[in-house]
Length: 317
Ligand code: ATP
Ligand code: MG
Picture 1: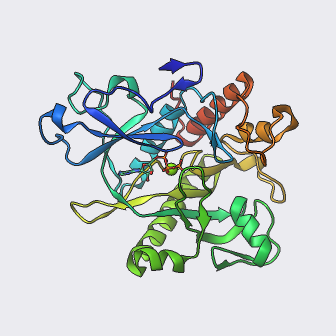
Picture 2: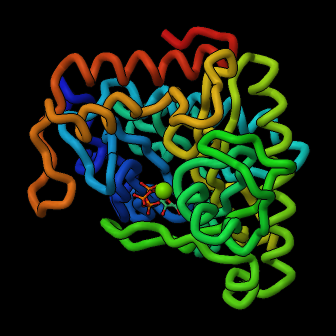
C-alpha cells in the first residue's frame, strides 16, 4: 500500500481490527472481537488512523502527501497533552503491537494511529475564531454577523476580533459543505446545557492554544473541534484530531497583514495551484481535480512539517 502518494490506510488488513468508516482523511477501525476472543483489553475503543489523503474544495486529491497522517497525529497528541487539564480527551493508547492481533496499534500504521475511547459524537463542528476570514468573512460581509454573533464595523480579511467567538457548524455528509449555524440552532439540536458546555470548552481550548501558538510566532486564527459523550461515564470528551493544519488556520505572525489573504501553514499550495490557470481545472465543473504535480506535493509536505516544528519546537523525523 506504500506508494509515491503516501499510505492508503482505507483498505488495510489490520489483524485484530475491522474497517468501519472512512472520512475524507481518516479511517476508523473497531476491534475484531472474535479474533481478540472477547472484549478489547482497553474497553470500548476505536482505532483512528490518519491517512496521507489531502482534500481541497471538498475533493479528495491524488496523490496524497507522504507522512501527512503521521505529522497530524503527532501534533494532535502534543496538543491533547497540553489541554488535558481543561478537558478530557479520547486517546487511550498509541502503543504499537508486540504481536499481531494483540489489540494494540498495528505496526503498519504506528505513528499515525491512536486507540481512542469510542464516543457518541455530537453532530456539531465546534469552531472558535479569533480572526476573521473564510466563511466567517463571507457572512460578515452580508450582515456584520458570523453565526448570529454581531461584530463591529470596519473588519477586513484577517482582522483580529475583539474577542474569540463560537461559530458552530452542522456536520455535512461526505462531499457536502458544512453549514454555519447560530448557537440557538445548536441548542435546539442537542439541548441548551450541552450546547453551553461545548461553547465554553471550545473557547477555553482556543484561548489556551492561541496563547501557546503565539509564543512560538504562530497565529491560531481559528480552529474546529469535535466532542463526544463517553457512554460509560457520561463525560463530555474531546475527540477527533485537534489543532492540526487540517482543522485550524495557522498563520506566521510576522507576515500577518489584515486586508489580504494570509499565508498559512497548511494545504495552501494545493488550493492555490488548483485555483490557478496552471492546473487547468474549472472548480465549477463536474470534472474531478487533476493530479497534483510532484512540486506541489513536496512543498505541501514541507509546510505541514514546518507547522509541527514551529508549534512544538521539536523536529519529527
Ligand atoms: P470529513 O471528511 O468532512 O472530515 P468526517 O469528519 O466524517 O468527514 P474524518 O475526519 O476523515 O471524516 O474521520 C474521522 C471521523 O471519526 C469523524 O466522523 C469523527 O467524528 C469520528 N470520530 C473521531 N473521534 C471519535 C471517537 N472517539 N469515537 C467515535 N468517532 C470518532
Ligand atoms: Mg473530520
